[in-house]
Image (cartoon, rainbow, N blue to C red; front, side, top):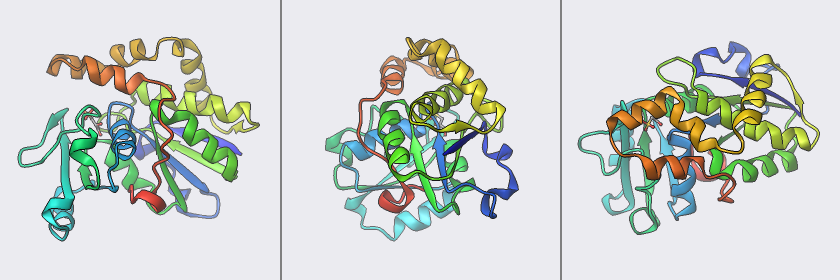
Length: 241
Ligand code: 3SL
């Protein structure tokens, strides 16, 4: 297994859907979309359908029975007007999400999912389900794995690199090899912060943005909690795309 990392959707090579493209794509948005997805599925959501475009989201959600759906929307770190939930992993508690289909759009994370949508196997990962996703990849042994961060409006993000390094660390221990410099750098970042990932999330520019927006202590703790969940969000099984 060869693992590569691309910081944002815009850096993913156009060969993604050709013969040299990956067998598996893993989308990362630590703060906070892929953490929210992992916790929502863990807490009993029936599926999480993601959308880059809000009109498409509304059209699809409207075709679903009202009592079986939740609209999850965030822009600029804040909940969207008219949506049921924002993008906090603290809001997707069992009483709210159990049995519901989540229709979700966020500033950056759902764009990265859109970019990799045609890859045969699409997964999402965050720190809480890092080891579960690693074990799935180790079992399935895709030849090429491309991890794709979400960043912020096209720019690099520290926390997504951190999680790419965390996932790669587990994969390398099982024999995977590194295929690009971005992956090497992510591994170095993980090695620097693995004893205190929450501190890394807090100094990241999007962490600082969330702090400026208000009290997000619980979100930071939840997003930094390593290997707590066994859920493996996939396009095929939970409609995550
Ligand atoms: O950019 C995104 O997709 C979001 O995860 C950003 S936020 O953490 O909800 O502000």
